[in-house]
Image (cartoon, rainbow, N blue to C red):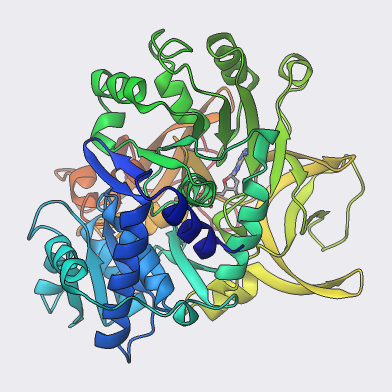
Amino acid sequence: MNLLERIRQTSKEHPDRIAMQWWEEKLTYGELELYSSRLAAYIEREWKDQHAAAAVYGHKHPWMLVCFLALVKSGRGYCPIDTSVPEDRVKRILGLLEAGFSMDVTAEEGEGLEAFYRNDEASGGMKAQILTLSAIRRIVEEETEEIDPACALKGSDVYYMIFTSGSTGVPKGVMITRDNLEHYLDWSVTLGGVPKEGKVFLNQAPFSFDLSVMDLYTCLVSGGTLWALDKETQQDYRLLYDCLGKSGVSVFVSTPSFAEVCMSDPVFGEQLMPELSLFLFCGETLTNQTVKKLKKRFPKAVVVNTYGPTESTVAVTEVVVDERMEDEISPLPVGRAKPGTRIEILDADGNLLPDGEKGEIQILGDTVSAGYYRNEEGTAKAFYEAERDGAVVRGYHTGDEGYLMDGMLYYCGRIDLQIKLHGYRIEIEDIENNIVRVPGVRQAAVVPNIRKGAVKSLTAYVVADTQEMDVRGELGAYLPAYMIPKKVVFMDQLPMTNNGKVDRKQLGG
Ligand code: AMP
């Protein structure tokens, strides 16, 4: 059964089961199936000529799911955009998408997507019809048709598009096809060997980050309930523990950084979350210390480390972190390749390296993306086709450094200037290219501050016409909060290497 059929089946067998809950806002499987089918019928009729992926704007609202599925059922892809993405980035994304319509599922009327289109000059004259939450609610009440299942996206069609930080300062839209997602889900439901049917899954990441695909879709195909933690709740300990305590979460999907945040207080343990049976981690280094602390608080839970970039559909390797590894192996391995995926390690000249030798991690197989949306150069640089065992497979140069040992992959860091800060993927050059957009700034270099092997914060070194400026404040217009350097240091000039590049080493990078 494919993913849409599985959701439909749950909606028939358990129509009142909750598919997603965000505080008091709930959506049952029956509602999700009916509303998305009606909305899909409306889209198909009203926007016959519009086939580009549409933006779905919002934060953790269960009706975002109605929009995602409606678009997919009507044969269109979607691009989730979280409300934390700053205006300038949203405009760039919308400009790239050029969708004729988009959906706005922000709870408050009038402060969402409309603002990005209102000012025609700043938005480059973009025009699109916007369906607001109240309009969507009205449509699904009044619509009498349901979409024909034959209209749904085909396997090679783009199912979703997630934008990641791009080194040129322009975000890159990673295209994930329906086949990519279905292959990923066949594996993700088996993760950790823990049964997932009907379980409650934690949703920590916003839908515009691919980690959320792990909880959202593994949950939906397992007939489970997605329990969403919004941004405000994640930043307020009182709300956080209240929400987690009420959740009944069984599958905890997050970055290791977020688990560390939760462990700030001893209350985060088995008593608060007695159902918790599985931790699924992805996106950044999982340390032995984090696992040790978690195992103390949740002795019965299985801890799984997974690894992968957005470009290969969330994750492609898995390892259950057992007691032996916890004590003896540091850093922890990131796992073995899932079925349908092959990991290879190449040296700088493209030669295959043997076990134990460090090189660039290559991911080949059925979940590797079709490429970056409307970015042929970026796609040609990062993706390739190769013949393996008599078949042509798609490959991706990850830019990650690592080595293999008897099929087990170990991650050693990046070979370029990409970093992870509190679980977020950031290209250092992306920040630098946006700092120089601030009026008066001439040059910028950003350096990560590393402690115990992890990036803790960022410092920007800036050459500007005047030091009487609020660089961090101005950057808020271009970059999301997590990308804004904590410290800004003004300099007369940046140190240079002999070959004329900014000398990051002298700046502590
Ligand atoms: P994203 O596309 O945001 O998921 O970021 C992908 C990048 O995160 C990878 O290329 C790695 O650099 C890093 N990453 C993902 N999983 C892990 C992991 N388990 N351990 C260490 N780094 C990871």
